[in-house]
Length: 322
Ligand code: AVI
Image (cartoon, rainbow, N blue to C red; front, side):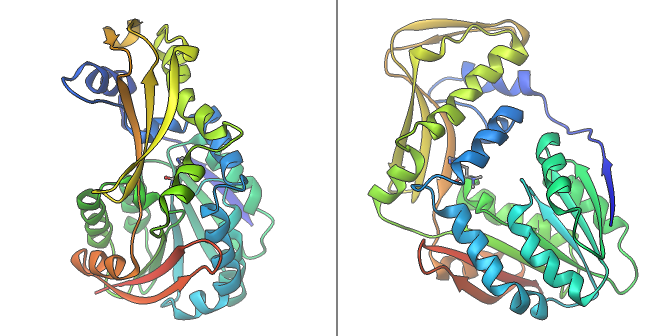
């Protein structure tokens, strides 16, 4: 077992994105990637254990039950690249199956350094594995790994946990096409997707009784206070989950409970909120099985197999680059 980390030059400007999102006309918005600082990543880990939020457990169950079949279907020899590795807990099943077949190089790509550290700690006991973590945005990390691929080696890319659902549908196809362009024919992509489910299941999953999802969402304002010197008063905002029927998504918002003015010195902004006005912080799109294959085709993949969980509608989709 070998573990290295390639530290980041993650290329984003938090202050500029906060200024753009909160001072634009119309719906105020903050990119969901900023939910995942150290506190947010830890809160998301707790969400994944909540009874109301079955998504992560379904993902993990499918990987545990089908790891050998998945690995048998992947063209080898292959290096494994995971986009947004999180804690790495659910990847263990796949990696153990892989390592039984071959000495395996595993490249987790993560913008959160603490998630990368957690992931490396979680998986480093697997025999016959070398782990090199990249603190990068997804496509930058994948490009770097692809540049070092050995002759005859395939890439097996993991994009689990339905992170694709946090892109709108058009951006999802674009992202998958960009992944495809970095890959070679017969490389594979394992895509985890949350499937459509009832309104009540969705609302419970994204507004749990204990308030962990609310804390996860409100932490974004706390992060702006910590990192940009803002004076958001958190009790003056409320976490709201709402269904967008047309987009087939569930959205998270932060609703202002009163008229208020917030200053954000390091984003050189003063922001006024009306009573009831919201900041849109995340969308989680839900898919149908057929739609996933159509989306894959549009992006240059063929859909080889879909595994569906019996307890929580969720699919693992093995896509092969054409
Ligand atoms: C990471 N992502 C797929 C989660 C989701 O379900 O959209 C993030 C999340 N937001 C609220 N709860 C979990």
